[in-house]
Image (tube, rainbow, N blue to C red):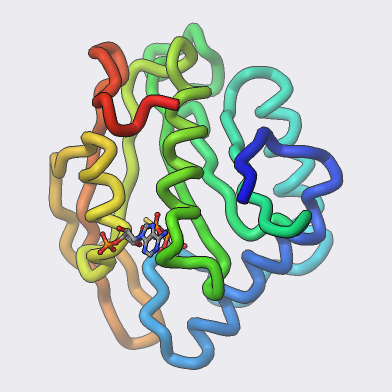
Length: 183
Ligand SMILES: CC(C)(COP(=O)(O)OP(=O)(O)OC[C@H]1O[C@@H](n2cnc3c(N)ncnc32)[C@H](O)[C@@H]1OP(=O)(O)O)[C@@H](O)C(=O)NCCC(=O)NCCS
């Protein structure tokens, strides 16, 4: 497995990984990531990828990609909250991570976080994220990297007729990195 920065050529494989989350949800898996009601169209995905790539190039986002046998199988993005680095929230990044189902539980998510947080140092001071309260695997992963819970949002997600609570978590990057996650 290799973790590297985003490439323009990653579009199709990352879109497929993302689309498969909708298949998982369809099968009744309580997938712990916020999705749209319907799977976004191909043009919507092209828009998203183009904007993401621009934000990476301008330094407003970090995007790490995990590759196995030459295929992208997951990504971790940290996106600036403020529109500009100079805005009053420009020091905050919001993190999201996703690994394709067959590759979970093998260290891919950890490798993605390690890479993305390493890239985020010097660019952001605070990393925030929200995790479904039922997503124990993801929360354990974040805790291993030093994230701490800072809030609980009841009924944060409405999926069909079901509500999910969310935990807000935060990591301050200005201290020394915990020894076990530094690249
Ligand atoms: C959450 C998610 C990103 C974690 O990624 P992952 O690749 O499964 O994470 P890791 O493999 O690094 O760690 C998960 C577990 O595998 C274990 N693990 C790590 N390396 C391993 C290895 N080589 N062999 C076996 N197990 C391993 C870890 O110890 C960890 O165990 P734990 O859950 O008991 O703490 C992934 O499950 C996912 O994409 N889920 C769906 C989307 C989602 O929920 N995203 C998060 C939104 S907040």
